[in-house]
Amino acid sequence: MFKPLAWLFSAAALRFVPLCGVAIGIGMGLATAAHARQPPSQPPQQQPPQAQPQEGLPQQDLPRLQLQAGLHLLTVQVASTPAQRNTGLMWRRSMPNNEGMWFVFDAPAIQCFWMKNTFLPLTAAFVADDGRIVNLADMQPLSERSHCSAEPVRFVLEMHQGWFAQRGIEAGQRLRGAPFAAAAPTR
Image (cartoon, rainbow, N blue to C red; front, top):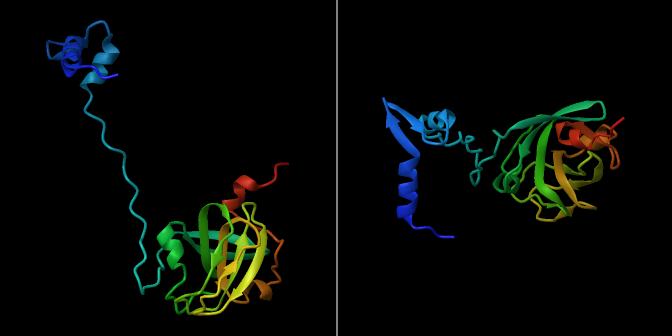
């Protein structure tokens, strides 16, 4: 309900009386008076903005994460914003052998990927919340053909084409790492 501002100002004026340079709250106690003298709170520190990809330039400065596939450790760049996910590995001409890109979506859904402006042949692993690889899809460079998850997933891992096959990693196996800690079985 709307209250006239004159009432608000008069009530505020009656709450505090300066005495010997110290504000004492009338009927509110010394704790309220001390709180009233504190400087106004500072706005919360904002996180530095995440790197936004630029058209025609590869994104190589994304946050990194370690995952484990079988006995193999891999380092992945994390694409978590819509702009980062849309750019993915576009424009990249090379990538270390045990590195890839980890796409994180807000909620599980059928995820579809293509290779527009992507020069590296890749395999996409569509990954469930518990780390289970739902399905794998080999993708050809510069193709606009869609490759989709077989069921709703929140994660997609892109690695060099053949990386999973060369290591005997197939659909149904689980990745391990921080993204799956909450889904780990309890014992």
